[in-house]
Amino acid sequence: KTVKQLIKQYPTHAKKRVLLVDVSEQRLYVFNRKAKLLKSYQVSTSAYGMSNRSNSNKTPIGAHQIKTKIGKNAKQFTIFKSLVNTGRLSRANSSGKALVTSRVLRLDGLEDSNRNTYRRYIYIHGTNKEKYLGKPKSHGCIRMSNDEVIELFKETAKGSLVYLQE
Image 1 (cartoon, rainbow, N blue to C red):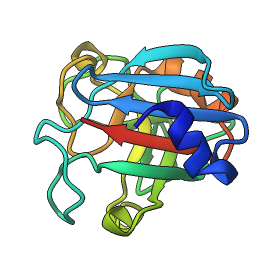
Image 2: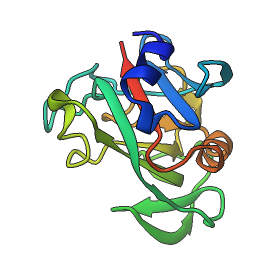
Image 3: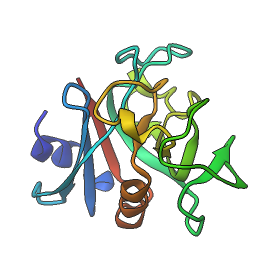
Image 4: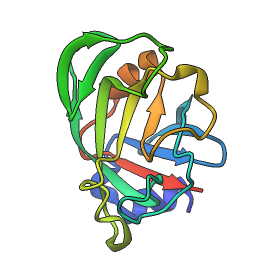
């Protein structure tokens, strides 16, 4: 689908910004409500591909909205566990387990096929694995650099349209 088609199909979610995640390119594109490209960011989506199936560890497909925004005043590299600020900080590239850092934009599906996205805990979030951005390495979420997820968080309203495509 084109961005113009998405804006027409989901007008209540396309008031200010529309986010398009292109999994084949590992990029997130930011458009205004007139379908003008404003920015693009390198991301990392699932290492297992795309699917709307629960427990698949795959990035969901289709139209979503930003349901909740978490971490507004958190320091860069703050670690979130179960959506709660732990008060601890990570680094851009730390060894060990992949972490949710800096900001969290929790997604909710807008189509019958992806209504489970919210229950699957799929987010756009910062990561401690920035060196892997541009490669599919996540367990379903859309990972971003910490600088860029903070910028996106500021520029994107709750309820904004997020479209995920292969």
